Image (cartoon, rainbow, N blue to C red):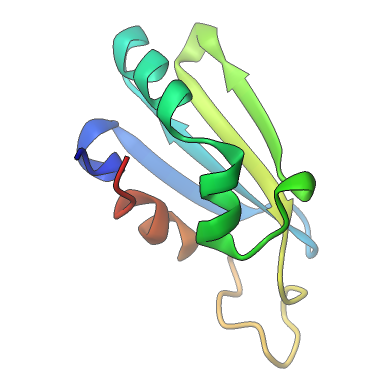
Length: 99
C-alpha cells in the first residue's frame, strides 16, 4: 500500500472561514493525480475526519493536478474546544493515510 504523503508533492490544510476546513492535495503529475483521484474517496475522507460524507465537497482540478476537499469543522474556529486554530494539523492525517 502507498502512503499518500509519500506519493504526492504536497498536502496543505487551512481554514476556509471559522466553520470550514479545506485540504489541498498537490499531486505533482497527471499520473499521480489520476491514481489518487481514483483511490481517495469521499468515504475515506469522511472516516478520516469524522465528518459525514454528504457534507464533504470535493473538487478535482485536472489542469493543476490538485484534489481539494472542503468540510465543516467539528469545532468552530477559536471555540473553547478547538484544538487546531488554523486548520493546519489535519494535513498530517492526510499525509499518513494509506491508499
